[in-house]
Image (cartoon, helix red, strand yellow):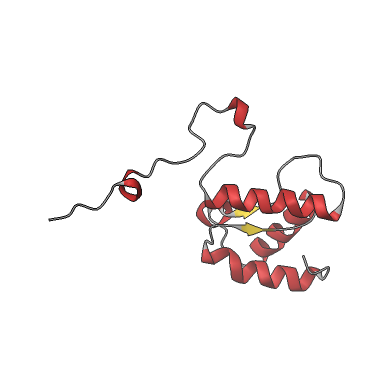
Length: 111
């Protein structure tokens, strides 16, 4: 968010079609809806694949209020997306915390 609606609209028009793994849009939901509505009315095609990478509002719901806490919530969300994980409490997860990497743990075979 640049605090300039027109600039944010232009950036979003250029970035959405790239289908980035994570594209975060800072600000409230109604601003996101206005931006997406204007993109559509200006002729930018918004397909589900490009919208799937758009995270808005950004961050995990950890009760963040201060700038530092908000930054932490955003970074945690980005990490979860890039690790292909759904964020949540570890105590509520039945899945292993760390991925098993058998190939990386295998010792080299000497011939």
